[in-house]
Amino acid sequence: MLVISWEEYVLGNGEWGMGNGDRYTNNIIASGLNPNNSNKNPYSLLPTPYSLAVTVGVFDGVHLGHQALIRQICSPPLPISHSLLPTPHSLLPTVVTFRQNPLKTLMPDKYAGDIYPLEEKLGLLEGLGVKMTVLIDFSEEFSKINGRDFIGLLLGSRPVKLIALGRNFRCGHGLETGADEIRALAEAGGVKISVTEPVIDSGLPVSSSRIRQALASGKIAEAERLLGRPILPVRP
Image (cartoon, rainbow, N blue to C red; front, side, top):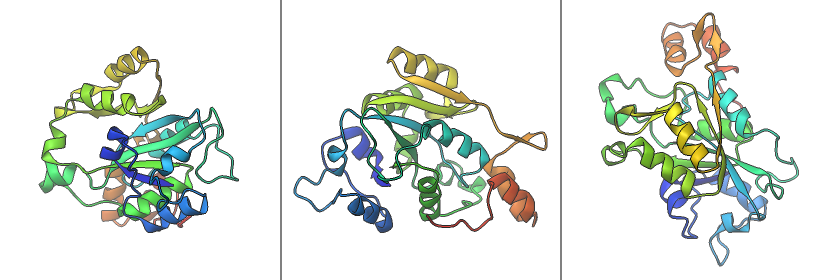
């Protein structure tokens, strides 16, 4: 799985980094995309024409609700014979997420920690079929970007053909931009949008906060049911 920064995604200047996880860089080398080659641009070696199928979120826990979103960008699945390279005309499953949970910056008193550290989250995303992850370094400055500008950068910087979002997704300063506004922006740019309803368990939406509450109360079975896996993930 290719791991890059938001700046690399937006600028697209040929200097595509590998993020902080060496084991993901190793996957790229095994696929023939050597980050140490002369042009330093493994993304440019992808077969063309290529396009992206994108979803956005914190993905804390990569729980059942997150998995429903990821299925939207990973269907049909890419060939198993190439762990990164898509076939011509296929969509590259791409997740845009955060290196650190935005709550840690915006409301540190309400930040209860993450269900999994970043390395584990990346492993879970890769195991679900994600081929590229874009990491945002969230900051006070980033939080001031309005939602329309963020979506404009997301859809306009790369050849995005599909964006998948949860029904309750909101982004931008003050969470001003929701799924309906994003639908209008996407469709105006010729981008297909898939809006997924929340996954319901025991009459309530599956959420990261529910899982953290279950873990804090010692309800391991409930947490694992909401996650869709044992608490300790299996690395791909």
